[in-house]
Length: 373
Image (cartoon, rainbow, N blue to C red):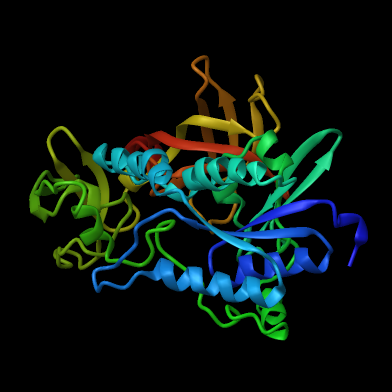
């Protein structure tokens, strides 16, 4: 235990999972003044009447009692609805596929929660994210987590300097199996709890059923983008994402190859599909990103060669970024990319460093002539 840390207060965002539990434990062992906070961001009684938040809150209580730190529950349901869920619905309304986790981290965990922690006299907030923060030459850098399989910088790309200055990620240097081992070794109640999946704070409900409670579905035609032939009916454009194969309900007619979502026409309510994985309509040469956050400060005025991810867990892809006059960023791919999805996050990297990211607004489709070149 480091006595020098005793005067430094760290408030830990605790979810009831193993990662945030070990985060709190490690900080306590390092001598910090640690407080646990469970964020209730969603009234999450599922369709069976089970409230998983109550179970998670109980796990937080058990862990905090075990390691000897105070804990509180804070309700951010209204803030979450206004700042994250409304955005989520608006994007689906526009036929896009949003990533609410990015918005949740920026607006709730490192927005509302950070402010609440500061009100409690905190010097820092800590979460169980697999990422690292370092300070170099007066700048805060966001680095990938050491465990490549768990790195979560993709979801933290929208954080700025003032947020990173107050952020701690105590498990960012650990592989996941080691985190579980520490939890088991210290008898934490969450040691064997499975990792949560699904949309941030909404959990593992049937997604289609969940979305239909908030947005009316508008069924329409599924049309072969190559021939113009109607191949079937879709349940509503919001339920489909570009490149999707499952759930189309089209048999392997013709050459027997599977069908994929190639495009959406919101005005005509048409879902365009294509048979086969190699058609040019599934690929793009670049994209335009809006709402771009450059972690170091201002987006460079000159073109930047770096790598990018267009979806979580994707291997890095070589790109060139060029800032546009309106503040958006044009991203040119070194290699044609498949199934780039408007509404998703594009995140930029230079080696271990996450440079920032933005929202995919428009894609530049690969033309037939380019595909044949």
